[in-house]
Length: 459
Image 1 (cartoon, helix red, strand yellow):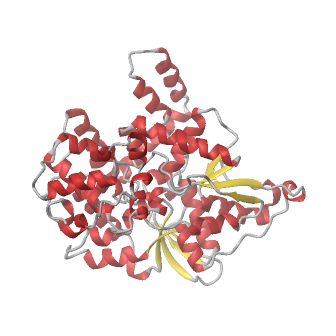
Image 2 (cartoon, helix red, strand yellow):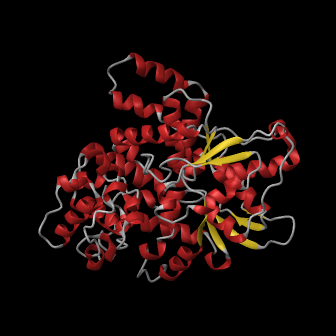
């Protein structure tokens, strides 16, 4: 898929126009190697951040072409940014990663009819048109609630005419919510007393269809902590899928539309509850740098974007009061463990705040997850484009979850959430549920008045 607008309008859109000092920062020290999931599996230098940066520098210098092999290598990279947390030189791998993928798409080295069609459908149509996406969501919801999904799965198991990869893909289809975010959250919600803050709430794209309950919980928790919440009913994709998949012009297009939706200067913060989205949303200032109409507003936007956990801890959220329950009388507490979404801990450097919220929850005991910051294999659409590596990482993550003996896994990103749910389901595990930290906090607030019957909504 090639955007209609000129491709290279921005210095960050190509390795050859990128500030060369970003490429020079890599010292080849190797601290990134043990943190890179693909390198740890293959032990091949080209599958490491250091190896990929060497290839990028060769292209920037004109010593190497943008080849098919380079394209496949950069799409084998998860973009998890664990290397950025490990790097002592502060290499901005996120910039390099996006510029490299933009070069790959601009040169067309990976183009083929099926891939082009899928990119146009997903990136060019569904994820730039929220009403079309919601219509597709309604169709998928009907497919699920009318029992057609069960029939289709039975047929797929009986026929060998459909590739096994397609059968596995169908099993990963997320459950669409009955109600979308605009049907659960009014455009403006005010707390009973005078608001302490005025915030905007981003409802996302996948989040809107599959986790609208998390958006509702986010709005409730913000109101409970003195925030007036503005939630435009029709919102656009944040653009992270476009930026991470080599389409910067599409990313800028949806960014401008989101900026037009919110009175940025009038808000104290703009809240997101999706880690992958948040990491990209905080980069709007760089994305729209030099745009005469949007650059200043985008820079202000980047400063005001806050992950919901980050914001709640910053304003001093109210710890929920213990609610009467049989488990509390018996001195028992459910175990919760926390999976750190890559773009929250590595991209946004937010790690402490979700744990503070989880530790404040009555009747829950936080148990640390081994390899909590290790990627689960979701990585945007990586589980679709690289299913084998994604599955290996998914299985590794589930193994670590089982070691904690927790009954709840908390995760702050929709992709991670689905990856964990599917990984547990693949093993037939029904005793562990996956929840967003804000959903657990919302349930605790409700339980203060509802008593022992209150519990977090199941997915």
